[in-house]
Image (tube, rainbow, N blue to C red; front, side, top):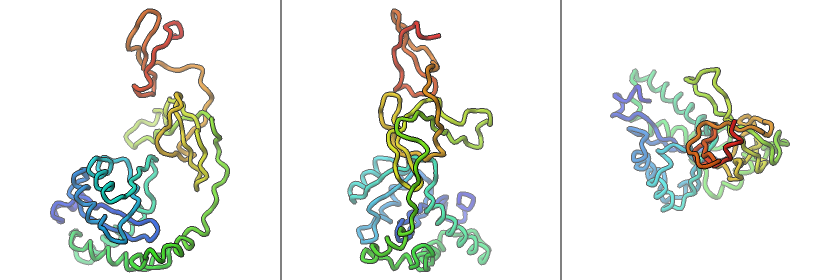
Length: 268
């Protein structure tokens, strides 16, 4: 919404929060995506009422992952967890499309790109309209209706099929190139990981460990992984130090925490 900031009191963004079960949504205008700005906006959503979220999933952006947001969520006993996959939060993305469609209709009818004053009305219209997935209006969902709604929404959920990978398989992780990266650069990391656990989610997700056996934060989908052979050659990016017959090296494609001393004779 940055293009229309001049029409909207300098507000460039809208913070969107949606409750996964009821589909009830909140929207708060923001001047920027800074951590301080988001921290000031969250209390407008996380009020001490029955509709206040008890679990909060966000991406790893610093606007969400900072000490102030942690303080707010801890104070209100909200479980804040991060999304490590590059896949977007589909429920929020779908709501964003719904809200933008409503905003553009408002723009066309009123001949202006001013949305700041119309946002509360557009949000109320959404929350008070019957939602196709749940068959009810989001505003009507209460804690008493939640158990029945759980059955409505999840009774036909598919059971995940057998995963393509199994525990201990060596894999590399997709880097998901941006549009600015050259087509001939590698699509995957050079670091080798191993499947630590196959999670029977839908779709199947995998937990990984690095070559030292340390857990990698977050889960990964099948299309983010590539099966590889166990390597017998590892590439050295740089020799950092030498001492007697040992060299301290940085490994190609690995961060500095993997630096290690090896025998000089094994380096080609």
